[in-house]
Image (cartoon, rainbow, N blue to C red; front, side, top):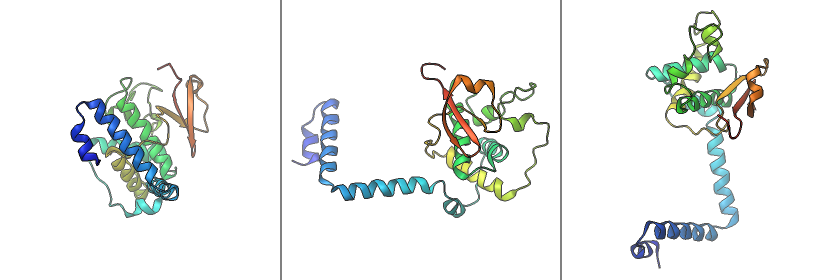
Length: 197
């Protein structure tokens, strides 16, 4: 009996879910292991391509609105010396914060949080006393591409939900109260300890 015939006989949402799981299981069982591994390998390669310079160079120069501009600027000033994955990781933190009730709900709100308070900036470039001037156009274009991809739904899989990060060259007290999720390039990334927020 085919899926369509089976689906027609299913009366409840639960039966549809069970049927869907059975069809998925049959599908997986009928794929030879080498073919299934090949599919997974290609999927992983496609995911890693997102973080490659070769792929990023194929993308057109990105532009966007206010939220894009805030994210591109933050990536330029906070992570331009990092790898592409490192820039995506910093973008993940900003997006994770924008999605959290504990922070402002926009990218610009997150990036600009604390401006005007001495040592209150969440992103150090906003409180370093230096004018924010973009001198490296190529680095800014890369930051803009990363910002565009992240704002348009690029997967957030590098930092395990990190909400905080800092340079490896410093050891802030607040980091001791958090769980380190990963280190990418010159940054350590952190999330709240399990059960705390």
